[in-house]
Amino acid sequence: MTQKQKALRGIVTPEMRVVAGYEGVEVEYVRDGVALGTIAIPRNIRRSFPSVRGIGKGLRTKINANIGSSPYHMSAEDEMKKLRAAVAYGADAVMDLSLGSKLIDIRRQIIAESPVMVGTVPIYQTAFELSSSRRDITDMTIDDFLRTVQSQAEEGVDFMTIHSGVTLQALQALGSQRRILDIVSRGGSFLAAWMKKNGRQSPLYEHYDDILDILAAYDVTISLGDGMRPGAVLDATDPAQITELVTLSGLTRRAWDKGVQVLVEGPGHVPIDMIRENIRLQKALCKGAPFYVLGPLVTDCAAGYDHIAGAIGGALAAYYGADFLCYVTPAEHLRLPTVEHVIEGVVASRIAAHAADLAKGMKYAEEQDAAMARARKRLDWESQTDLSLDPRKARTLRESSGIGKDDVCTMCGKFCAIKRMHDVF
Ligand code: SF4
Image (cartoon, rainbow, N blue to C red):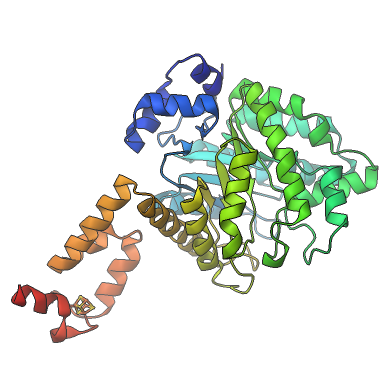
C-alpha cells in the first residue's frame, strides 16, 4: 500500500510521524492531508533517508535544488559536491537532471548519498539512450519510456516529473496564439516533437495508467510536469499553459484514484501581478494538490541574478499558497551551475520560503526572526551570524570589515544607533 492508501484507511505511517515532528503539527493533520492529497510525502519504498519531508498545506515551504551533469560537463564528483552543498545550505529535495553518458552512475551515487528526497525527469534518460543508439526521441515507444520509469523506481527515486499534460490539445492551443518563446521545457519540447512527427496523441498521456501502476508499486510521487510553462513573462497565463493545467487537473484525480501521491508543477516566468491568480487557479483546478513552482521568475532581464528574480516570485507564490519552490541559480539561462551557484540559489530560495512562512504566521519563522532582532539589539554578532540563512557569508562579511571584537559595525561606528539607545534606555 502507498502512503496515500494507508492514510485513506486511517493508518499513521512512520513517515507521517517524522513529518509531524519536524513541522510541529498533529500527526492526524498530516495523515488527513495525505489522504486528501493536499500533502505529499515523497519517499520510495526502496529508500530510507533521514530528512523525510512533507510538502503541502499548512507545512513549511520546501525548496528543491536541481543538480546533475550535462553532455558538456560530466563529473560525478562535481555533482556530489553540489548535492552536499545544497543539503548543507538547507535544500529539502534535490532533482538529478543529468544528461550524458554518466547519467545512470551519477543518479545512483546521488540516491545512495542523499539525506533528502531525490527526484528525476525520466524522459531525459529515455531521450539520451535513444540518441546513443542513433534513434531520436521522436522514435520513442511507450515501452522505452516505461522501462526507464521502472528502472528508476527500482533504484529508489522518490518523485518523478512526468509531462503527461503535454497533449495534442495543448499543442493546438500553442498554435492558436503568438507566444514569444514556444516551449522552454526540455520534456515538453521532446513530446511536442514526438506528436508533430507521429501525428498522434502523446504516449505519456495515452498510457498514463501504465505509468501510474509502476509509480504506485514503489510509492513514487508523480510530479506532473508543466511542459507548456511560459518561458517569458509576456507569455504567462496563456491558452497553452491553461490547457495543460486543465489536463493536469484530471491527471491529478486519476493518480489519486490509484493511490499515487501528486505534486503539480507550475509556471516558470510570471509577472508579479499574475502570481496570485496562477496559484489560486492551480489550487482550485487540482483540488488543493501541492504546487511546485520553478521560481517563478518575475522578469526575463535578470541574467546573472535570476536567483533574485526567482526569489521575488517564490516569496509571493509561497505566500499565496505554493508549497514547494524549485530554486533558480545565478547561472540560470547561461550555463550549468557550479557549486557556488548552487549555494547562492539555495540560499535565495530559502529566503523566499522563510519570508513567505513568516508572513503566513508560521511559528518557526517568527521565532527565528524574533531571536535575530534580539541578537541585533544586544549587538551579539555571533548569534546574528548563527541565525542567518547563510551564516558563512554573514561571518565572512563581518570578519572582512576588520573591526575585530568591537560591538558596533563599520557602517556607523561610534554613531551606532542601537548602542546609543542602550545608553538612552
Ligand atoms: S553601527 Fe549602524 S549598522 Fe552597525 S549595528 Fe550599529 S546601527 Fe546597525
